[in-house]
Amino acid sequence: MSGTGSLEEALELKRSGRLDEAVIAIEGVLARSPANPVALAHLAEVQLRRRRLADAGDALERAESLAGTTAFTARVRGDLRYREQRWRDAARSYSDADALGDKGSWSLVQLARCHLRLNELEAARGAASRAVERNDGDSSAWVVLGDVALREGREDDAVALFERAHDRAPGDEFAYAKLIEARVLRLAPEDREREVEVLLRTADQGNRHLLAVLARLRSAGGDDKQAAETWAARRKLHGDPYARKMEAYALRKAGDLEQAATLFRACLLADPEDLILFRTYVHLQRKRGALDELRSTLEELVPLAGGRRGAVYGELRKLGPTE
Image 1: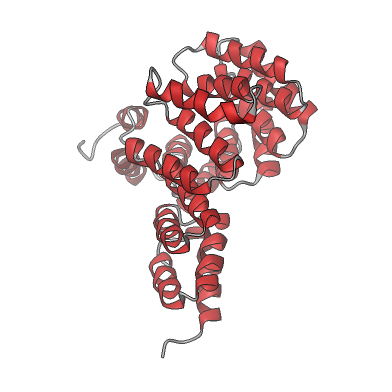
Image 2: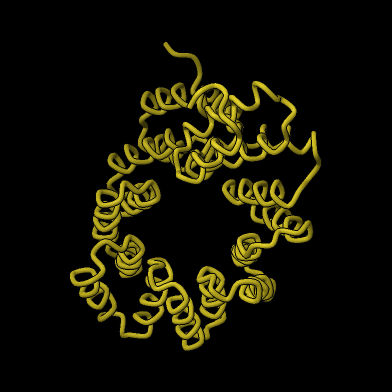
């Protein structure tokens, strides 16, 4: 794209998933028009999708300082806070987006997910029900309602709700996996893994969410080594950062601390602002006595850590000066 590209051209790059190019294009727009709140808001969303949380927050602050909070910026702030696992703050932002006129169902579904994370089941059901009223075809809203039913111990209702989610979007692999998981949990424990394995060997080999179901079943059955192998299979099939992180946790539980540390390090360098991941890695390396490895990783994290840079410096200070 030339230096004279329009914002619409930049947004087309965003829609097509060409996020690095979208950043360059939006920054080109901002070079010509620095006080463009719309461009800044979209830059925040792209940076968030690139996992550049500090950069996303900075662009969002600049956008709102110019034009105030809009439905769009409130939704993006909700996504940012959700990504930071700040569920209460995220819920407030999604509520703001809805109040400011966000017409889609995304903010309501995310609001419901926040309430679910906070174990506020009535509030989660209310937000998800509103999302269904707004868009009956949104399978994600039906999935949240199914999750609420599961939390409340209403297994039959949960299956029925997951079936609705699957009916609304037969191609939604996550909704399908939730349905299968709810069904197999009604089987005897010794039959659950076999049922999912059969599905994975037949029509659903590429369903990464179904692989996650199998991994969780194996972990629940006490076989963390096999759970790690299942997460590894998903990672190799899909290049999946979440699967890599879950593989690391499973390896840690299985006692393979060296391999777990290697994977946690890769996860942390790819997602340096994940505070829980950061603390997990630091604790594991201290437990292993791998302080040189820890120092090396921390030094590599410094320019990447964004809003978590203070935590990185704090751990480096604890390690003391190099000899």
